[in-house]
Amino acid sequence: MHRISVIVPMYNEARHITRTLDSVILAARVAAVDCELIVVDNGSTDQGPQRARELGARVLLCPGLCIGALRNRGAAAATGDCLAFLDADIEVPANWLQLWQQALATGSTEVFALDCAAPGHAPWFARAWQRRSLAGNRQPRLLHWLPTPNLCLQRYWFERVGGFDEQLRTGEDKDFGLRLHAAGARQLSLAQPQVLHWGFEGSWAEWAGKERWRQGSHVQLLRNAGLDLRLLRFPLLCLGTAGFSLLALLGLLLGRPGAALGCLLLAALAPLLLALRQGWRQREPLLLLQLWLLHGVRLHLGALALLQALLNNAVGRPERG
Image 1: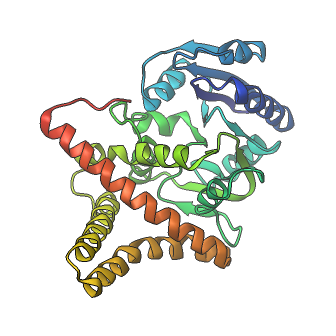
Image 2: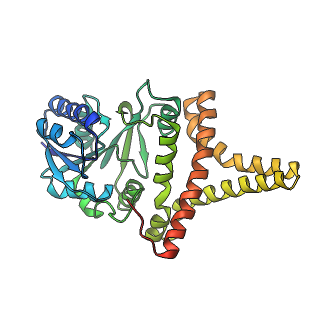
Image 3: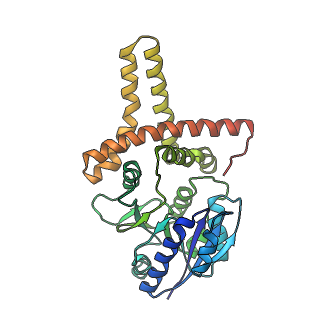
């Protein structure tokens, strides 16, 4: 029987942490596993740490660290031979750990996660954006990397790749997963059941702010991995899309509507291809249109974040977490 350490980074998540930990406690009871709860607090000023302690979690106070460092601190304090990384605003289904134990027993994977969805009352853009990564046919998928809203693996694999990169502000999960893939770890994503993301974006401004922040580590990722085509692809799409948009605007200002229209169509091409790749699995035309719009906004935000990171790197300004 494995001992599982569930590691939850947290910052001002009092409104969600009780639901999150209650769902883990139920999952541990259903799976009949030995489970320890470790909450790594990044300097919360609300009641989150107190509520976590009331539910039996060990709370580590680690203010001022990036998300990768928080997870690493939790792993260093953990005593389990299996590690589960869980966001503080995620509700897991009752059979979450039972499914993980079954996957371990069958030897079908080394890393495990469930697909993540937003609750039904979330705004359309939050629900559509969360659905972009879901499997359309609801079949298990082996992927090159898994995001970390709920990520389970044996400690051996965590230690083999050296944990999360503490220099990355964002993108640490992709970096971690790609290193696991290079080390030979199979990473399994189950389409059903799903975990629920209760910390969904409640406004366009919040969504845009988070997306710009998430795109802020491309320069660091490329510096660490070199000119990896898989990592280089998205920054180039961002710059290309934003460049064609600027040319379209310039064409309008110069009184050349034909050229402006051509550039605008080229700017819309990359978002459309991304929407088709992700939305086609769902077989829903409305979702496809929503993703087209969201990817268009995201690519422009990514270009802004990339240029800002390059400027900061050129002047030697440190990245802020």
